[in-house]
Length: 279
Image (tube, rainbow, N blue to C red; front, side, top):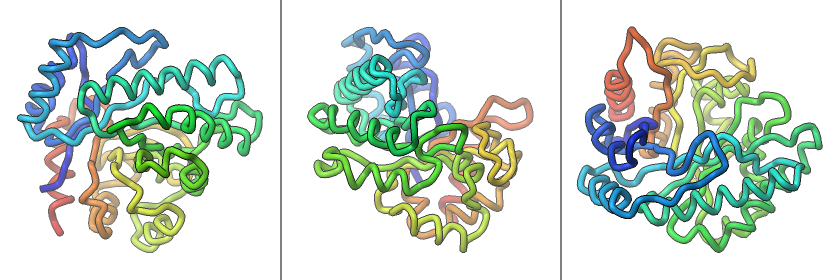
């Protein structure tokens, strides 16, 4: 059975996210394990953490992903922001280890105009500095849509970082590919020949998860605006083509689509599952 879920709110208590995921028909999910919009990290509540871990295991939601907060920028040339970003990555790794979460997805960030090569160097430095903290967690580098000065719109960035960091040597590094970002960065996932060329730039075996999102903008427009499945520029046919390619349907498939009056998240999950289980 395909592992399909979505990003789930942990509002109130992280243990509540399991029930929310089950109500939507998920058999995997993604969640924030620290404050998504701030630097401060509060310690987890042992009872809630233990309940979450037990419920997630019993409900068949493992393996699952956590996602890094919005503020960290691993590619930042600013020493203070870089230091705080590494500290946040360490804290999120610790939370994932405590909760039994297998994967931690992180954006690579922006070089802020200091130069693409320097941005990649900063990401590699950050990953090397947390190599001893990963333990049972695999960090997944997420591709970007290509907005100004971002790292990771070109999939070769992911492979470059992978080849140069000590973290990969321990098996604690992989990739998460966002379909909206791929499409808007110039990878036409609606076409099989384009998908073949895409996986010549990035090794599918290193990809552990996909963020399954339609794109509000057009092909190659380099925005980062998610749309609901079948309502954007990728379309249902595009997702069918991607999910029929080799082992893509065997990866974790995590939706991050917006709320919409005309389609429910439960329906979207069911649609992606039906496409993933066609072959």
